[in-house]
Image (cartoon, rainbow, N blue to C red; front, side, top):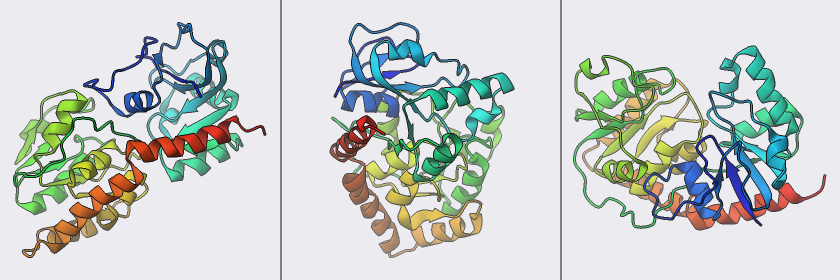
Length: 311
C-alpha cells in the first residue's frame, strides 16, 4: 500500500533512514518509505492513502487538491485534541470542516479516539503511536546524577510543576530549549538549559541523564516519555498519555497529583536501588514490546486495512 504524508514542511521527497532530524512525523514516513509532500504542490506519484498533518498556524488545507493524487485522505492529529479551539472562529470552522471531509482520522492517544468520534460521528478513527527510528542509536550504559525535565516554564509544558518535583532529587536540573521557552527562565535556581539541537543530537544527549520528570498536561505525541524509555531512563509523568502509561507504568500519576509525584521521587532515591532498576528495566522492555519499529509496522498494517474497508 502506497502512503504519502502532507505537511507544511514537505517537499515531495523521501527521508533517508539516517536523517538527523527524524522527529515522529518523519519517523512515520521513513518506516513506510513514504514521501513528505507539500500541501500545495502535487507529487507525480499516485497513492492509496494520503495523511495530512494540518499546520497549527494555518488550517486552511484543501483536501480536494490532495485527493487528486490519493484514493483516500485522512487527518493526523497535531497537538492536543483541544488545540484547534484556540483558533479564530473562522479557522475553527475551517478545521472542523476538514475533519468532516476526511475519510479517516489518526490520533495520538486512546483517550483521543472517543473525542474525535464524538466530534465528527466518524467510525474510522485510529491511534497512530509515536515512533523512533533507532538505527545506530546506542541505549545508555552509564550516566551521571543529573535530572532532566521535559519542557519549559509555560502552561503548555507544565515546566514549573516538573521543576518543583525534580528538585526533590537533589541533583542538577536541565531542561531542553523549546519553542515556548519564556524570558528569564535562566534565573531559576539550579536549572540549566540545553542548546537547541536536532533530534539525533537530542537523543544522544538524553542518554546522559539519570531520571526524567515531565508533568505536562498537554497530551499529544508523548515523545519525551518515549525517548526516555528507549534509554531506560525512568520518567515521572501524568496519566492520559499512552507513552507514559505504557512505558512508565509505575511512575504515572493522576493529573495535578504533585504530592504522589514527590513520593515517587523518594522511592526512586531509595538506597537499595530496587525500584529505580525495576522502572528502568521495565521501560526498555515495554519499549521493545509496544514501540519498536517492527511492532509499529504491524499495527499500521492492521489500521490501514481497516481504513480501506468499505463502510
